[in-house]
Image (tube, rainbow, N blue to C red):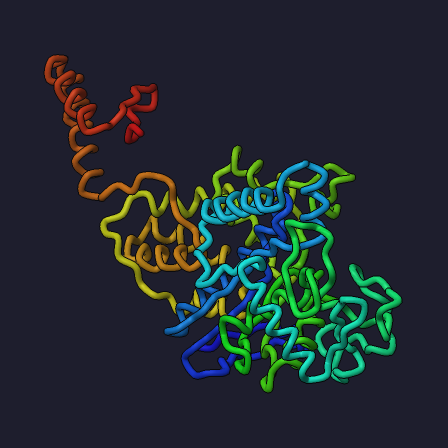
Length: 443
């Protein structure tokens, strides 16, 4: 079975072939931990999680890396604004992010590196780039020399000579070329700087990811898959390719995927509009698995419009699926190749959700469908928070209820009460209504 990924590098859907047979490594850009994660952060993490799940289904050895950026200008600004120590701020936000992702049933990455724990690796990577004459030192800065890398623009289709300075890149007098970008810069902030061969300072944004990747997979190894939001294609991922190519003898990465943004009622999330939806806030009022389904409701490469209809549709899907999973005769699972084919088609989650919704309906008529449904839900990270009841227990409960109803008709109220007490001891709550008796397990 083959996995196909829409590769941003080639702008076409391609069959995925790992660089090393049977072994896969994937890196997905994680959050900058200066404020609580919002649903856009959750979507980026979810796409990485889903690729990790399907890759693990197809290959024996999968390494999944998702970083935490805890060195950044935004962090310094937020720390000063709140009057909170930088380390405390980043540690608090990191805990919130990790807790949110676990609630959304994200698998833990194989590695979750932090920038602050990789400063030595970053310095080593910068030194390699300098040694290869692809960077220069000016005014206590180490700057990447754009003229040294002729392939710049391969990911974003932007040519070096046509570039307008990207966001976060300011023309500075120490740069030979306004389009050059910083690998290391001096820092006046005591709690956000480290000693280096070029003076006290801190890394630039782009070099952080490149260094963390190389420190895990090896400097001369090729990354199989790299992902992140489509706002990172330029300049961040483009600069990663330039750096990675100039510190190593290997290709930087073979496959790139990028997810679309999350809109709220067709508007981009922003503090000025007051429409930023934090993961913590929505999890206070909504089942995390329903939120997970909502995040899968649009294809990952397309924008996801977050509305009340999005949530209502996701609740309906969840109820359909879990109502079938609630009562089972066994806990067995069975691989479903048709479903896996859907996910292998560039992670087609909308079609996958339709498939398991139909499968859930079929399972109510034919219990033999249940093992495949369970396996498919596992691949999507969908789990039921309801109590799973063995079918033999259901039969026993309904038999006792029938006996109680017969006793009541015969006006044998002592026997009816005894049976009701017996059911209560089994944590079964009865409700006598005009339409008959209904029951549920007491939580």
